Length: 145
Image (cartoon, rainbow, N blue to C red; front, side, top):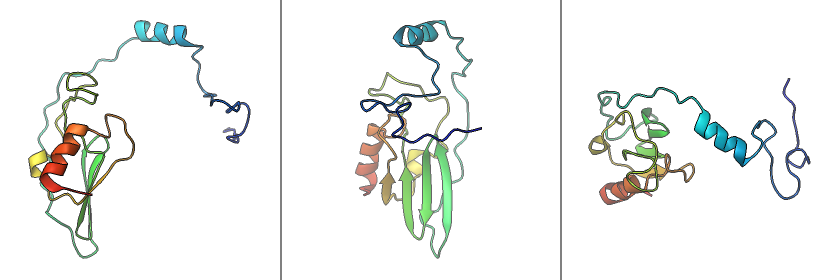
């Protein structure tokens, strides 16, 4: 049974900070033990995949088309407008090109095959949602809003 708690409940917020009531970690020592002793999952180095079908330049007359590109990157085409969400075409999701999780599969659509992009929508500023090199390339190629 789910328990509903108010955000003002002292068991969640003590007036200074929030606490995760579901967390089982005791502190930094427990976190470090987990990091160094956890069993790492098998993860492929690379998965070959072909890019998907090329989308049209625009969808008109009350049409809607959504193309999944990767992770949270979607091309949403609606009423003549092309919206790209959380674009990332870099090889890594990190602050610099050699740091951060490495891509194991090519995006479902090659950057050069993008139709004209009118709007870029960024949900939040994590590296796997707001890729600066990709944003710069989009600005240079399309100047979206």
